[in-house]
Amino acid sequence: MKIKKIYIRDFRGIEELEVDLVHPSGNVLDLAVFAGPNGSGKTSVLEACLISLGRSDLIGDRPDNDVRSGATNFEICLQMNSGEEIVASSKSREKQISRALQGIGVEYFSSWREPKLIGSLPITAGKKGKRPKETEQNRLWLIKQHLINLRARRAFESQQIFPEIEPEVFKLINDSWRQFYPGSDSCFEVRPISESIDEGFDLFIRDIPTSQLIPVDALSSGEIEVLTMIGWFATRKTNPQFLFIDEPELHLHSTWHRVVLRVLRKLLPNNQIICATHSKEVLDSVLSYQRFTLLPPDDPRIKLKGKDYLK
Image (cartoon, rainbow, N blue to C red; front, side, top):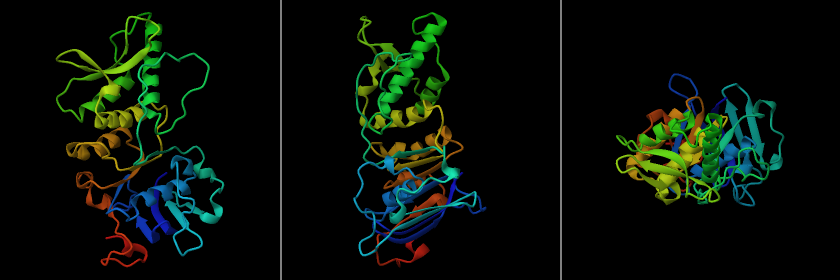
């Protein structure tokens, strides 16, 4: 299932907006990038889609009233490639999700994401108890815990202590990482943090030339951002049908702006990715028909009427 058309009326700062996410051949786009200056409504488009898909819980702290000033009700309509229309409004915010959407995975990387750095972790595989919630803040924590438990399970199955093997998930993470560092042989590994069995394990990156192990919490903010993105999807049992990203370039050097969507596209080859960006490099990394530039309501180049909102 993919979104073929987005229609928004009287939502936040958007009076009326209609966008066709369609390839020149007529097929629905699997990648769409919204660009434009601050205040043009890029984030609002992403979060309108989340509300319509029944996942307003992914947005976090939101305005008390999403209705545009002067209006009485907002309307959001997503036309799917199946022909179904998913409609939401301020009058039916707690609407029941249609059968077609039940079980459909949705992920959102907001522009406020900041991972929690939690250091070493114990093995939790096979243990009962609370697990951290699957929130943006906990993504790095959950990735590390998954990889630590995976290594422990492999060690148990082979009756060895951290054998020199590379399970598929590590290979996927390392291969994706190397697209940001062409020519590098660095790789991620799980290791005990000391000789004491009570001090737990951590995720490290090994610098091949020096064999130095660097804990991932000590990486730069941009490197942690990359690891969190690729690690999140490499360690999930199922991939989302829809991925929304606000500012995929967050914390990244401009040379990586051209790489990030290509890596995500490779990780999620069958999913629809819709994002908003301020980066010229991110916009240049996609094809012309995958770009949608929004302009703010007071811009003299546009009229607030349907498709004229797009230039």
